[in-house]
Length: 291
Ligand SMILES: C[S@@+](CC[C@H](N)C(=O)[O-])C[C@H]1O[C@@H](n2cnc3c(N)ncnc32)[C@H](O)[C@@H]1O
Image 1 (cartoon, rainbow, N blue to C red):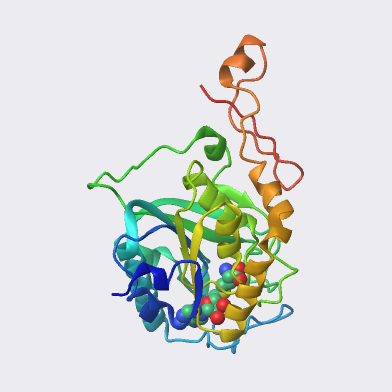
Image 2 (cartoon, protein in one colour):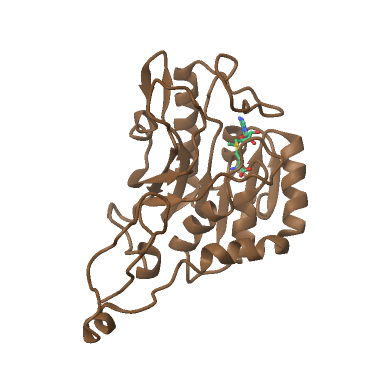
């Protein structure tokens, strides 16, 4: 095991599993990642651009892929402090008609699965017609319990108001082939570490460094790992100019607020019903109140 100083506020070029094995136990607070999905796009791709990474193939035998994901997730569990969280973005895939679901391997990790969040990307990645357009990906909120207590701390109301469907389009202005939008890691990190600063955030497949920028904007330390030198260099450049991304970050952060409490609404005879969602995509109204 090495000293944490070798990792804090660094973007390391290397294999995720090998690098994670060098990080000390219980040393990070939260993580967010989107691993390569093993999409094996040499066989697929129609109408939409193929995702091809510089420096890594996305074409492993599925059993090897899932074994590697479990090993990575268990290493992250080891280095996460009890009470810490990890947000794992993945998607449903089909291989010759068989559904490959992230739960197939997540249940074989050490993590407690705290929530399954639907990321509504508002756009279909594959326009062929065997199924309804798949506009969603998933984000698994994984939790490391404290003393066997699986439920953990309650979320503050202003975060819990954001429902289990996260709706934002994919990132477009980023040269990386598969970045997620800044709002995604920002929402995850902010929701579980609102009142703290200078915590440590990890992304073991950090690509263009979106999670690391989110950590920096929120006043935390980061550890990034990616196998591609090109993406590591891009992430480092992006971190230098992270202030340019603060206006985008503020758009997300201002969604975390309670406008009127339940008591105030009741006193004024206003609507005190529950969450109402005007689907699809027209406008999401959130009746936000706390007791
Ligand atoms: C879906 S992308 C992550 C994108 C990132 N969330 C962003 O916003 O830019 C997955 C990343 O994993 C990296 N990768 C692939 N295999 C890897 C491995 N064995 N170890 C570390 N990184 C790897 C790829 O280079 C790619 O940048």
